[in-house]
Length: 420
Image (cartoon, rainbow, N blue to C red):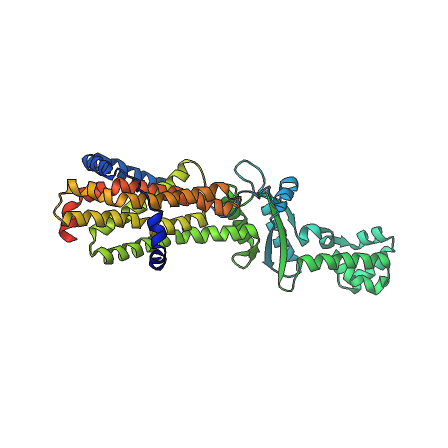
């Protein structure tokens, strides 16, 4: 930038104009006169923002497919499908299938707060292949096939089936007496297809169609009930996958890491500012003001009942804390500079505002406007939500830097100047 400035010096001189005047003196004087009530009022607003921001609802996926896309139009017309797949340890023993039946019954009985089912449909070996797992006696087989009951009883005895046998085992042994029979061959083919879809060497598969979506307010509750049902029968030896589960995992990881991210970010910014100012009180004020702007930004979302897209929150936190704290550093540095030149606090606040206001407003308005335009014009939900949140956050930062920060600087003057 310095190189370009020197190269374009003539063009800059020819195109210069009178700067826009900002009434920093008036604003600074007003803030100083009202410093105590202004500080009380704005700190109260920050604390309210912190209270509501702690109750924020976070969204981890797009609330609805955009109708502007072909996929969105298909989903709007035919609905969407986001199946969950359970992998359950087990074999083909009766005990294993009984456990699977118990889980299927539990999943089918799950209900949401309004009484509607949690799981819309369940496809498994014990549902799709229920006929293959049914028990048949010798009399049943004789009646269905028209064979001699004595011959069927002898067949049962030779194969060690006892009083009854499961249909899949019966089909497996049918080749010895009905080899080449087209009906038996067709049944064996159907059984093999069912097994290939639901039965593996060590795990069985269950496919569920949830009656909830990742954008529902009770999404986490619904997923908790599904996971609890699986744990009741299989402990922690099962696996579950699907887009809903991925969203659920992201949500839990994000919430558990949120406090760590906030604390590390605050500490890092605070440490940098402490090293820059070689002071502790002033960096604490600066971090409080910008963090207060973030709290108010997020609190507004909670009051408006708008869930915050988690990526938007992380990006807004980074940009708002990392970029807009420069506004506070500029105002604070100007204030300390004028105080060291011998001006009183009542004179230093308007002087600092007069010097810093054009830069803060220019940079702040650019960030607010750019974010707002992106948020309103972009059709991609993720980018749009980021733009709107950054716009609101930058606006809150500018407002607090130009009001709360000067008030706190004046009220903390003895500690700032003495330790500055």
